Length: 165
Image (cartoon, rainbow, N blue to C red; front, top):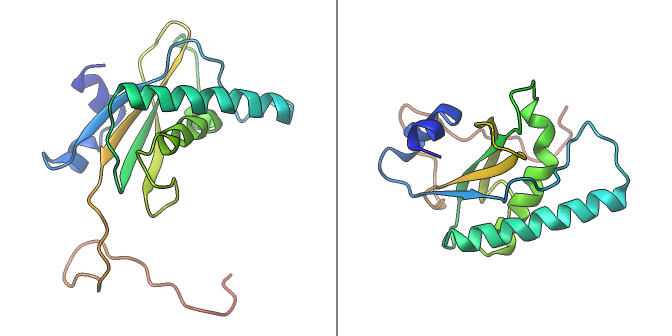
């Protein structure tokens, strides 16, 4: 996948990297069976497919030599087998298995919201058999301390205790 193709499916990548973040492109072998959220399959079959995606994700990340990171933004790129209509969000269960493999490989300590943004799913180019790809963008480590003053995005302060509705 060329940089132009990556930027076409992940338009915010240029803003994220701005020459300061490292990026890795990781892909599963084409033709793996995937899990679509709209298909109702038996939980044992889902577990079996998730196990394969997780194992293959770990191997793919190790082949790409992605180092241990504290935080990352992951773009999940779904490459369909044809140009038919797709709702890329329906492939989230497959991406979840892939991301679990990233954690299993030791790239991220966990896939919770303190270590991971995403997977932010996009449609990629047609690939015979279909394929999942990840674009892993290293993010700066979070440092504890007060929120910065001045203009710009700031964390949202949530009320403590009580009921929230």
